[in-house]
Image 1 (cartoon, helix red, strand yellow):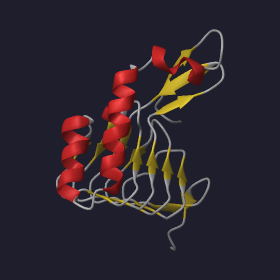
Image 2: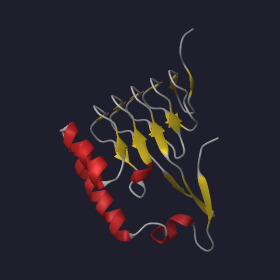
Image 3: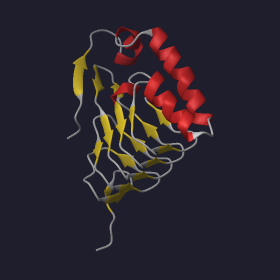
Image 4: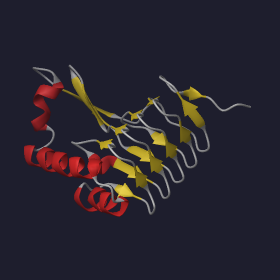
Length: 160
């Protein structure tokens, strides 16, 4: 089970009410800096933006590839350990806005983790140290340390 908090809403769907949960200023500021980081070729500059502007916890030598999309509303709920690689065009979400509720959950990615390109990581997920997530995966449940997973939905793909 994913580690998310649920918040019921009354009236129109939760996304219609997004600015009751996050300020417009924060959303716009985060959007601008995330877009700069997505296209930035310098890993130290990207990590500085993630740490000092967006409030993420990013370990030493962490590498975010080109076009990685971190959560625009709650990036501060993302932590990535040391020496991990987040592959091209990966999306890391810490929120879900649904019809009758919204959900928030931290995403914790351990150290020495490899996330393949075009992966989506849903809110409330923990990926353990040394894990590998194959390209194109949808991470909908926790991934244990050292696991090799992939697919949609993810499953263990290590050859025994």
